[in-house]
Image (cartoon, rainbow, N blue to C red; front, top):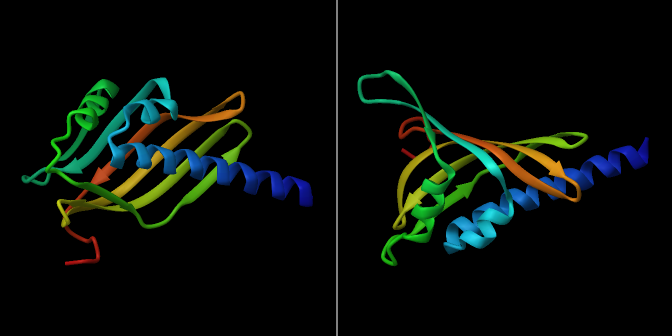
Length: 142
């Protein structure tokens, strides 16, 4: 029982490290590092409510994110602050739920939650799916 719990905590730490590496790459603009934790066929989606109150789901190509990070102007600072981690692991599948605040050039922009789905491909966890929500209200810093 103890070794099972230790193994699960060890895997949770590995999943957290993968998510942390994703954001390290995001903040540094390092697309090589970013790709190292993403599966080749990652799926990216964003859910939000538009100005008319309609729920919207957008699916983006991974290359769009990679290009945005690679070509971010030097005068733009993107700071996504993860507020906590809720990680669940079952064998070679994991989920990381990470509420966040996003700051653009040191000004609050929006908040939401990231939902990472990961697959352990041999020795390494890879992000296979990332969905996030975005909102400006109910963020706790109004």
